[in-house]
Length: 405
Image (cartoon, rainbow, N blue to C red; front, side, top):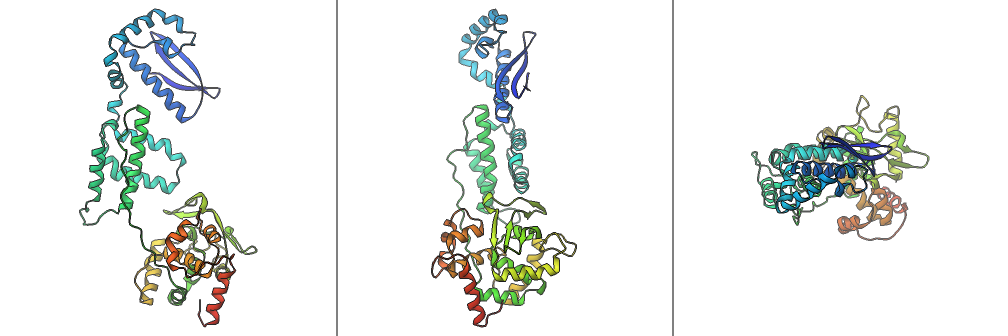
């Protein structure tokens, strides 16, 4: 078997034929895609040589070595013509296409693609592969996985677990995504028919949102532990995601311009990039957020993170949910709501105040206003178009009427 190498930025293949070392230069740049193409060519050459059907002049018509193999090429052409009916099947078998195990190809696929993924996404893919896909498909050849096999596997995921719990349709769809990507890539690379076709995702029921009213926000802030009042003021009135506020550093807080820059997140115990490119954004501070951050600066201003534990590390979201969030809701005597409802609350309050949907979308990190109207329209009494001042008016009205935040 030969190898793919690079010279002066261009790829060439190196193999032995009839006892002669053959190096054939190409004009292909050194990329993973081009290396795959040439490796595929080497696999084909190796199979043809073993079948006695390799015609050098057909593969490299402009090569200086063509003249060395004129007689051998003639014999190879004749032999290839004689076994033409069986040639393709025999070639595929010799290239090992029928023996490429799913677990081996999945590992190769992961290594080729991980460079473009966030750390949190890598962890998710490793979970889907290691806990779900490889245990089921691992020893099966990629070209032998059929459409019924795929549907049968998905159906098995829908069934209740041993503990009685079920996987959500959304999670199952996420498990199936790398399976589709892996099988389609294998089919494209080794030229067999992809079986993951016309398989629609499971229907995911939209989770209803339960934003807080402005009065409920005031009640929440009155019962939550005092040291977390500023934290939740920022959450309720900026729309920041948990990972964004927990990863917020003082260097991203500009008091002069009254801007919070979202540039990093805290996910799975480590700092990471934002969820999407659009999530990189600058949030305008309303008066209540500005005052909350000024107050918080007196507490953690010497630390790296705006909101942190006693040793200066980012907050543990599970710990905050269990020890701070849930007890506050219980004190309010209301049913449980997810901490993510603080983000929904921000959107509904801005919309209800009459802020411009385009401005809200930018503040939230949405690429369009579509989500605003799809999710929050029923909470919006009117849609006048302003630029940020309307929310300040809403806060002032609440204050004038005796409300406390």
